[in-house]
Image 1 (spheres, helix red, strand yellow):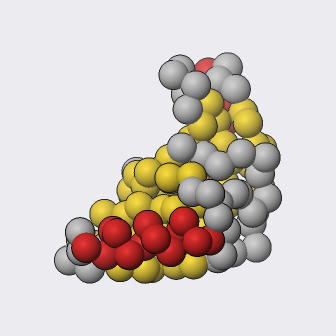
Image 2 (cartoon, rainbow, N blue to C red):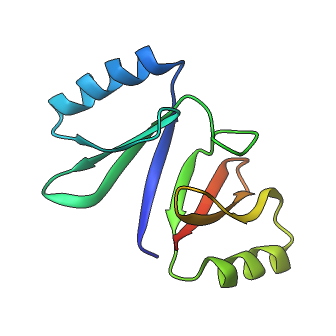
Image 3 (cartoon, rainbow, N blue to C red):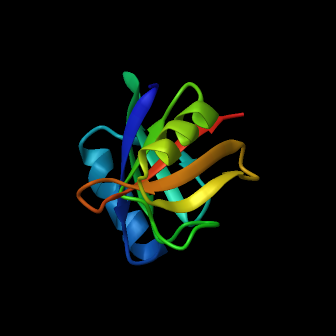
Length: 116
């Protein structure tokens, strides 16, 4: 596992900007912004991250958290074998990640990804 990132759903770009200003007070900076999702990071610890999402770019739901793994294909196979609910199938996204969504035992949706 490389990192775990909480994804906070926000109600539009205005809310995204207000949250960015708030989290800047805590020392986070903008690392990535696709419009629908913005990821913030701690400059002294770049894997300490938080994402603010208005929606998801290709999936039907905003995941509750993202988990970056070393081998997304092996993780997908293990999750399928476990019988867990796949919410969004494994696919390559145009922004350079391979990912899928799975529902955890508490009902939270987890975005499992690897960078290509």
